[in-house]
Length: 195
Image (cartoon, rainbow, N blue to C red; front, top):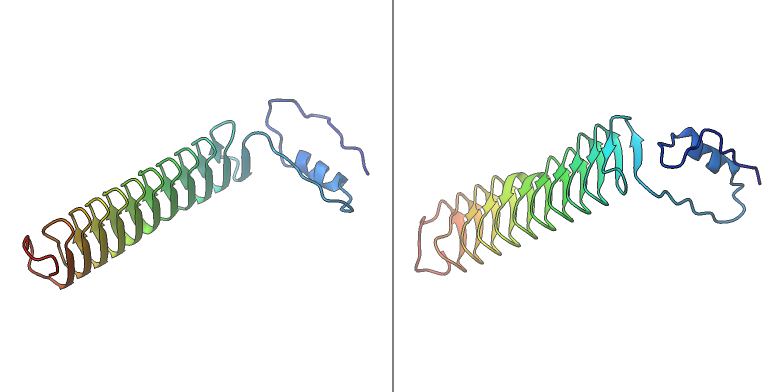
């Protein structure tokens, strides 16, 4: 086993790639080894930034400013605690996940594609989808799930009431716990549970 040089290694300072490579080169591969990095880890472009103690930024111009966060890709930003942003995403909610052009601000929310997951525990996927309600789900093309626990799916569907589900094109619910489907249905129907 080779001796690892500690020249130019200063505790509390930035350690550049050539120093870990010395460690890797010194391992002979005959036994399992673990390398522990105590602190941030930056890979790729030197302009990547982290929170200064516990995060991982990789790719180009990524920012992992949330404690225990991970940003990867190009210009992604993981600012929530324990958040993960990839691609060109922005994960602002604690424990949230943004991928693609997705953006999250809700706690434990997930956005993918071009979605915006604003409600806590919500999921937005597709192009231009938005979830504002708690535990809501929007998928497809420019769908909106504003109601708590609501679900919007299709094209320009809007689930605005608690527990409502809308499926189709241009469909809008009119009351809580209503299921609506079709194409440009009766807007504002507040009596029928299934439209």
